[in-house]
Amino acid sequence: MAQEMRIVLRNYGKIDPLKIEDYIGVGGYQSLAKAKGMGQSAVIDEVRKSNLRGRGGAGFNAGMKWGFSYNTPADQKYVVCNADEGEPGTYKDRIIMQNDPHTLLEGMAICGYAIGATKGFIYCRGEYPYVVDVLNTAIDQAKASGVLGDFDIEVRMGAGAYVCGEETALIESIEGHRGEPRFKPPFPGVAGLWGKPTVVNNVETFANVPVILEKGAEWFSSIGAAKYPGTKVFTLTGDVVNKTFFELPTDVTIRDVVFGMGGGVKDGKKLKAVQIGGTSGGFIPESLLDTQVDFDSMSAIGATLGSGAVFVMDEDTDLVDVIDRITKFFEHESCGKCAPCREGTKRMHEIVSKVNKGLATADDIALSERLGKVMTRACLCGLGQAAPAPLLTTLSHFRPEFNAKLG
Image 1 (cartoon, helix red, strand yellow):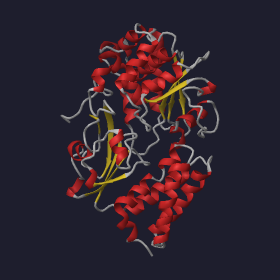
Image 2 (cartoon, rainbow, N blue to C red):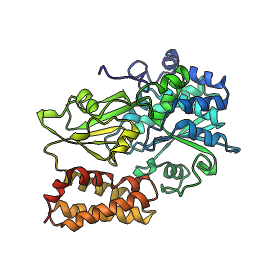
Image 3 (cartoon, rainbow, N blue to C red):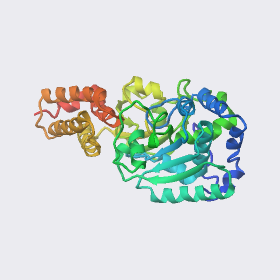
Image 4 (cartoon, rainbow, N blue to C red):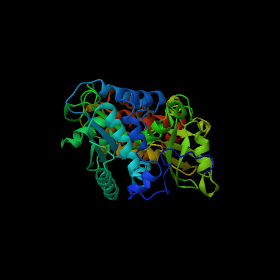
């Protein structure tokens, strides 16, 4: 674990998450106090200059996003934390919230001050009731001690819908509506929760903010990849020796993650593929393991960094069967609002299932590939746009596995 650099997880195992005095004892809430002495635009500029980019899925510059809400006049503004974490194999947000909840609260409060918001919401997935208890305890302690000032935070629980990881579907859910994405523009930064300017960031993104304010934008931007600086928390699962989590600078490679931190493939078997970023991530062959894990390098090979979930598959893995299960997952989780996703996920699963059963032809594979490319361009939100990625990347790198199952 010598490669580790813990920024987000800096307090992991060092403090009692249920005692605010422990967090304050290691410098907690000093960055919030510092921010309030800087001026709102100065705080936003510092975050923007750090080039902190979203640690959820889109990789957008956080300071720039904050600026949209700051520059939009309104009688009320909101800060929303996306803690839905619905990607299978992902648990990095849970680790942060369970072990250092106050770093999230402080990051949100800094954002609230910067954009002029007095209300924040943490949207937590329904499968995390124990995490909600930790968050509520931390919020009560922060209110009692007065460290948050006039900024109020409330936890809302989701109902288990994968699509609510998309920011506008999440906003709809908080408002009490069915979790479906909105058409954009307008973007949430201008018209979000209840039509008001709203910043939506991931747990890991907010957890970086107090350290950036403490040590400065230049310090943060000097770590990891130049265009996607800082660190990333990874969760490692599948056919790997060390099923664990860790935080690494963003200029390490996939090989460093799997073989360095993960200890390689278990039982001495060969690696077949790696999927990064959760279920919607692309399948990466061994030939691309020396790719850096930063957002842009991953995008360049048709993959994604996303949530940082790393799923390792050994030589015995039936990739067609894996894709069959993944397409079934997306068919189930599609909200059905737009036709390309509603119909596309269903047809994609039908075709892949047909291949898996040995009943398909080469024309079926060609059709699934064409369908996937259309979905990436035509679907309304990130769920539908990313749903074909596992299939398309597998066809790109592992097409013989599909051809071997043709009828």
